[in-house]
Length: 130
Image 1: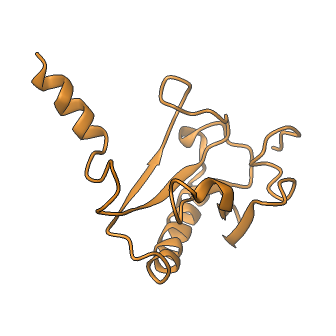
Image 2: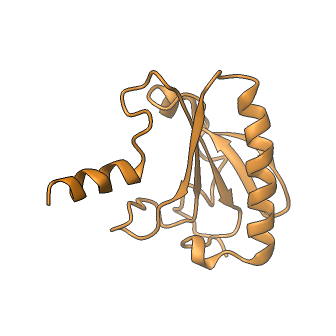
């Protein structure tokens, strides 16, 4: 399935977006202008229009893992980062702004303002206020 207006169904339509790696069902992409805040960040997207992570086929899951491991090797030689944030946002309430499944792969640095403050940090802050 393909959606004409979906940016992840039309990876080549955005001239700035770069396909770094791809396999049979997925692509690992980066967009340099979006890396001003999150240096080295990228996305793994299925080539088929899958609305969210729960719509992925077994082959897309396997191909996503393959690209995630390949992206890790690619990033480790370039950015000197200290960790990763890797995740899916699903549904509007879950933070998904584009209705095409995409896995965020974000290198994290120990000297950034929000280092070590993943989702658990914010949950713990809520718990401490009670």
